[in-house]
Length: 163
Image (cartoon, one colour):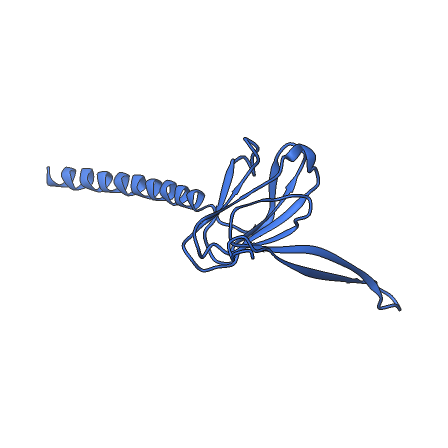
C-alpha cells in the first residue's frame, strides 16, 4: 500500500471551448492534473502539477529540454508551510537563465514552456524576492546619496554664513 509521500492523485481538469454563433457546442480538452507530496521528475504525461510541501521541501525536476520542445507545465505550491518547492532544470538546463527557481508562498505558481534547449517562464504568480530586494537596495543607495549631497551642501552654506 503506498504511503501519502508516494501516492499520486490523478485528477482531470476540463476546459470547454464554446464556438461563437448559433451553436453552443464546443470541444472538451482534458489536461492531466497531478498532486504530489514528494520529489518528482516530470514527463510528457504531466501538465498541471500541484505540490504540497507540508512535510518538507520538494524538488520538481524538469525533463531534458531536447526531447520536450513545445511542452508546457504549470507547477503550483498549494500548502501554507514555509517549505519551498524547487523547480530544477534537467542537468545544467535553465529556466529563464537560472538552473532552479523556488516557490515559497502558498498558491504561487509558474507556467513554463520549452524551446528544445531551455525553459522559459511564460506566466504565473512567482516573485523572485532577490530581484525585488536588489531593486530596493539600489533605490535606497540612490536616496542616501542624494541626501548626503543635500546635507553636505547645507553644511557648507551654514559654514559660509558663520564666517
